[in-house]
Image (tube, rainbow, N blue to C red):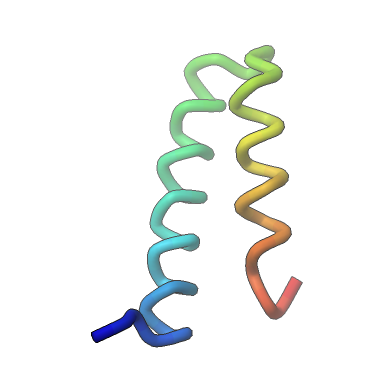
Length: 46
């Protein structure tokens, strides 16, 4: 049993929300910025 596309997109959006929070606390963290870019590229509607 796999995960549906809708579930995957929901997970990515959830992770992006947490990344946004982390970036508010550490706006200069380049690793977080890179990770956010990768997750953002995974969204279909981007």
